[in-house]
Length: 308
Image 1 (tube, helix red, strand yellow):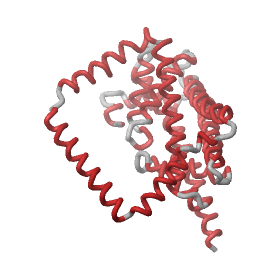
Image 2 (cartoon, one colour):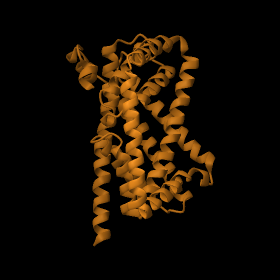
Image 3 (cartoon, helix red, strand yellow):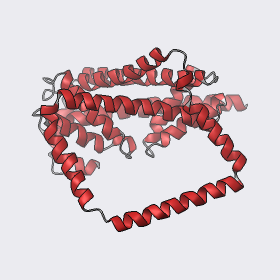
Image 4 (cartoon, helix red, strand yellow):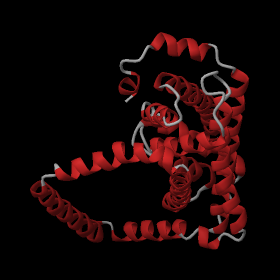
């Protein structure tokens, strides 16, 4: 994906633009993202408290950072990884944690879809052409090219495999399966039991506001994007949100292409958009590598002391 994003681009010019960036603004962008990670940890801690698990803030924070680090190895692996950290450090059942993570992610998806709708309503004249040419027409062509015979075959096979799995688990692991279902239900119901729902929602919107500020601050890092306003950052945020949802480690490549495409809608050259995307993605990547590794080291050290 990274190769496709940078294919046929003048890498020397992009590198020159990156080297001459104002790294004070890059630092401001990174701080905004880090604050969003802190809010994410606080929000997750609220879900645990609602289902009667007292999980320490710093263990929650370290788990979040380790999760982001794990996502660089395998897409979505970090969600399991951070639940594993909380299980080891706080004794929370694995599937109860997974239920809280899924609940948390559903709220993020809801905010992403809401921001996408706001973008379409208020920036329709800007994004309509891209949405039609890149998404609608492409999707229509793929639908026309579908072989429905193979879809039917795969659907039948999927149904048979699902039925076989249900039968196998019911007869071989019925007690374990029941425990898993109960734990998942406990995690899924965590939001309903949150006492201070306005605070939880404030954390949710605060996370996305900080993401928006991160995109906006990074505009001032290079001259070719310094003139862009907060509305452009909003559009770039929506595009980057969908890019990070792609099953790619850390959104590498997809993030670069999507963000560069979003800036092209505002007359920014694709090359300059790639330079901007590289700056913001690389800075966040370095943040995760450093703080994620630090959190991992702290958790391993604490875990070793607990065992001793």
